[in-house]
Each structure stands twice: as structure tokens, then as C-alpha cells.
Length: 431
Image 1: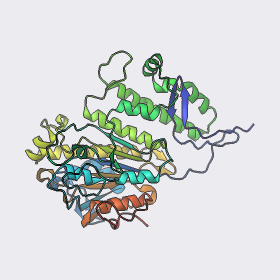
Image 2: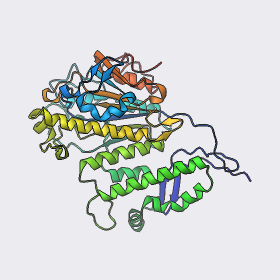
Image 3: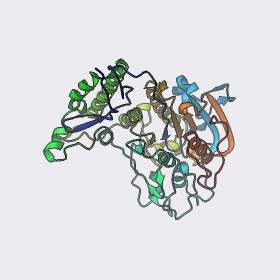
Image 4: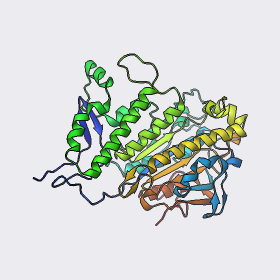
């Protein structure tokens, strides 16, 4: 007897909805998985890190196709053919009014001027991409981070402090970032059937999401093909492992309370990156912007032997070995993200094959507040739109030119961007 399955987006149970990845068994006869591969979906992720790099340790060497990663980029050695390092791109603004942090962060994804007295930016590149994909996913975009900057009044007088802590803007509105992995987990993997009564909330928060949907998962597994069973098993295992990691790092909390944010920023970063990969895998969103800390962060990094605050204590006062050590650790987090994307099957390839990862800082050499030659890496294949594995010297180009190229790779029709930029960075995107 023929069995038809409609496209299922959730598993359901006990007042909980769990988002599902795409399963090929959508409309099937005789319980056999459909053979044709779904089309590749292109995703875009920004990974921002603050206050630039020690250039001596960062700088790669060689020519476009015969090159070597810089010393602080060593963690990316296994991904050299999955990325392009772009040098001599500037993040400058003609009307920055002397701002060294606020203006550079505000312009990183907007390409706009930040004259003194500015209170808002226009629309950032990630949001232009999100607009082009509007309606295709449950979440238009996700804005994520590890810390909120609460600096008011601003230490750069004349500039609105809101500019310093927001990368993503939509028509003059800043989009705040989620920094709590538990809250993000709930937002992504639970749905509108949640019982909002006090007793319902307590019950839901005291049980595993996977446990809540286990019966529905068994029913679905009995009706899908072999390949989809493997995919579903791997996905549910990944969600459960992440759930356990979030609970384990949540610290002490009252009975029934949701685990709080992890005490260690390393756990917070990994959880946010893991959740980003799952959000892409489930096609919950195709645009994610993640920021590690913020442009004046005083986060210490004792696990690499750096106990002083990053902004003043390191980038200003110890711009040698301690600066290199933190840069190297941040790069290892990018490598972790690329590992996860590459290990996740997607269509006929992997998530990394179909994703564009834009990794950059707002400053070049942080100790000098220099916005020239900012560190930029573009990773992934963009579903065939990028040709990685190269060292691209693009002297004289602005970061906004790079963003135009990336937007075009995401099929955004953009004639101009930011402060009158009209041409894409050459040689990055395939025709």
C-alpha cells in the first residue's frame, strides 16, 4: 500500500515542537526514499572578532595560488583549500570624525560614513541578503554574540553608544544580538505549541526536548527511507548532545529554572557556533551574524596564558606575544566552525560547500587603531559561487567592495552600497 508523507518541519510532543532538517522522504510510495537530491541552499554567515590582529603573525605570504598561511592562522591549515585570505582591504570612512572604535564597527557591515552626531546606520549587508530571502525560512536572520556592551555615556563623545555594539542594521534600526545559548536553543527548537501556563512552563523546562518528541520521532522513523533514518538519528543525537552541553555549563540554578549562560566564554562561543550549524542544517534561517565580544572588550583569555583585559591590557599594552596568542585562539574558533560545517552533509555536498562565511575585524592593527588592511577571510563554496584556496591582494579596495561581491554571490541585486560604493571586489565571485 502506498504511503504519502507531507513535508514535516517539526516533531511534536508534550507541548514541544522540535525543528526538523530537510528529509528527502517528502512524497513517497512504498516507504522508499526519493532518489533525487534536493537543490543546494546558499547560506551566509558573518563572524566578527574585535580590535584587529598582530600583523606580523597574521600576514600570509606568497602569490595567489602558491601561498602560506600566517603564523596565527595555523589552525586553518586543514581548511586552506576551503577559504581565501584577502589582504589590503580597508575599512575606512571619510567622515568618521576621529572615532576609532564606534565608526569602524558601525561601518563594517554597512559601508557607511559615521560622522559625529550619528545615531543610526542604514541597512547592513547581512540584512540586504536576509531581505532577498524573506519568507523562505522560519527566521529571517539570527544575530548572535557573546557579550553586550553597556557603555553609556560613550567614551568617544559625539557618537551614539548604540553604534558601538551593533553589527546588523535594518533601515536605521539596530538589531540586538542574542548572547544566551539556552534562550537561543529554545527559540530555535521549540515552537508555538508550548504551554505558557506556569505549570506547563515548569514541566517543559524540566525535561529534555528530545524526550518530549521521542514518540513522534519513532513514528516518523517507521515511515521514512533508510538514508533519512540515518540523517534523523544523527540530527537528534546532535541536538541532545548540545542540550546536555548547555545544561552542563549552565551553573547552579533553582529547580525548574532554565540554565543560565555559561560561565566560560569558550563554552558560549562553541554553543553559539553549534546552534548556528544546526539552524543552517534545519533551514531555520540562511543568514547568521555572530560577534565575538565587542570592539572595546576587556575579556581575559587565561586559557592561552593571557590574564589581562583584551582591549587595553593586550592590544594597547602587550601587542606582541599576548596579542598573537588571543588572535590564534580566535582563529581556532573559526576552524571549529568550518570543521562543523564541513562535517554536515547538505544536498550532494556539505554545509561548507553551500555556505559563505565572512570572517573579519573592524580594525587592522588594533594597537594603532588602524582601519587599513583589515584581516579578512572568506570561507566556503557558496554553492559554487566562490573559488576558494587563494591569497587575494586587493590593495586599494574597500571592505564595502568586498561586501558588494558577497551580496552578489548571494544573488542580491545591489547597484550601490554604503558610502557610494558601486563595484564588487574583483576575482572573488565566479560568474
